[in-house]
Image (tube, rainbow, N blue to C red):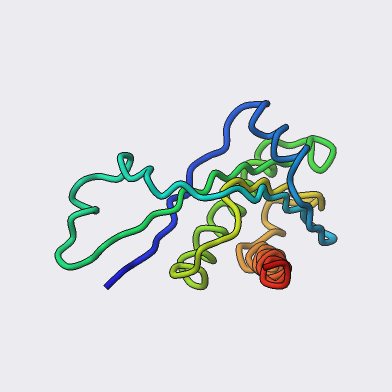
Length: 150
């Protein structure tokens, strides 16, 4: 039995964000922007995975590393508490969506930047369900576009 799973790692550094913004493809909604870089996967990066995970009995595991950057401007909210809450919600919703929906699917990207562009006003006004719906819609658009291109 062959199982795919995705390792989500942070996208760090100005150069990494700039490369995704410059040569990536953009999808927008009223509340967020998703930019992804379509690059070929290298499935030989299994050295980062612990040996105990690679040697499960009878399971051949292929992994795909996804680097995710989350950004929110000070123009959206001056309060760091609100900006950090939105970032946490975006990361968690992406993790849940990939686990629920795209676990056995090879995603067409390995670098992803998510930018939130809507002012929530108060940190209690934004919820995980709201963020998850927006992000799921954008990921569906990305996958549908890539299915038509191939």
